[in-house]
Length: 510
Ligand code: SAH
Image 1 (cartoon, protein in one colour):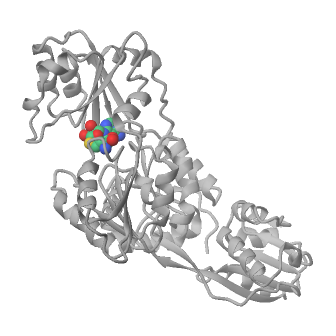
Image 2 (cartoon, rainbow, N blue to C red):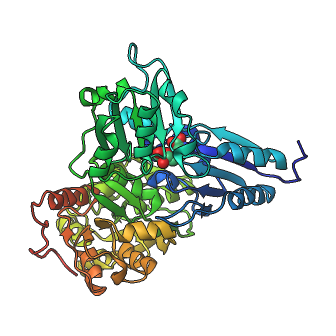
Image 3 (cartoon, rainbow, N blue to C red):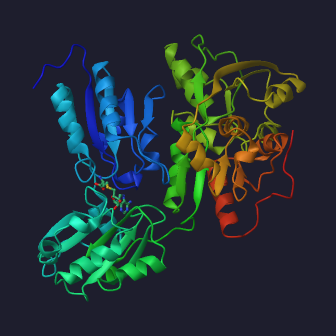
């Protein structure tokens, strides 16, 4: 093996699992969070890159639609170049990197170049999609072996498969990449003597919210797939175990099954909303168009205020960091009443041991002022984002209080990748959790016209809705409660056809 050049980096060949992001391994998540460079394919979970560093270089090398993928040599060259430059590279692949993932070829190239590499196995689609469809690939008495088979040979035709050997295989056959050649696979196997009545199943988009299973026998499965318009990615399972699917299928589509929802909020904050939507069965497109950037500030001494207002969950977190940076802790707020703009901010405070004395009901500045109506105040501190509205400070000043505004962070644009942009613009729903997500999303996709006509826009509240309106767009759905729970509830109601929460009743507006 040649000597690795000075300063050489490392390449991790990482399996990202079959699609459900919760099937990614802990090691995969760790490496993604650390990587300087992530080189990824098409069939990785949408959420796989969510934990990447903000400054990581993300390089897409898969194919889109019917287009060409980046040639393998180019991908390998990219890995070598980045590693030689000293980078920690994650080469992220769907499923397992060594199961039809060309991970072996990449490892050989790295080895030849003397570059250090690590292989992180992933949950492979053939096993995972089967499991999610209720098909155990081995089963005592039914299948004592399982073969993972490519439905495609090197020259892109299934003609060169050894049908006799496959027909005689004493166990389950799991075909990858075989949707378009299903008729040839079935007839090849039957022609070589495999029982035409043997159960067969196709699992499309296994482990994803839009997973579908089509059942049949070896004789009928190609026709059934055609009728159901099965598309890639799908695996085909041939064997007695496929007959267990009817009895063992367990996956229940939630109320949002089959619905794609784009989440535009900052990556660091998106996971709560994304997770909730996924649990309800939605397919979530992460399209973080903003990033929270703490502003450089002196350590904070909050003594001397009789009211401290915190107007976002981010402000709660950063406020606390500032206290700690000055060698203080929660006790330094003991003399002041603490007010949170809404329940999510109150929760963020509570996580730091701070109980809000006053919480706005609907998480808008106006509702916080209402909640503060009976609280006497002479000197107030308002901890907030740079771009926050002046409703709270103005309202308190109008009541005769001296108010200091503490700008803790600002919201900056985060560029979207091409794939995120396309997927988000075509989603069934796009969620907007602040005015800045509206502005930055529209500038990321180019214009409001780039949105697909069927896309419904979900707004967290009246302020965000009016920002949409300024851009010529109308929110189809507006949350009643202006936080993540409210957004999820409004979306559920819309999907259920229960009306567009408050869309017509007119909320508080400034
Ligand atoms: N390395 C991957 C396989 C890559 S080959 C793995 O270990 O899973 C790509 C093929 O994998 C697809 O054509 C399809 O047959 C299968 N596949 C990948 N993801 C899938 C999914 N979510 N559901 C069904 N099949 C899938």
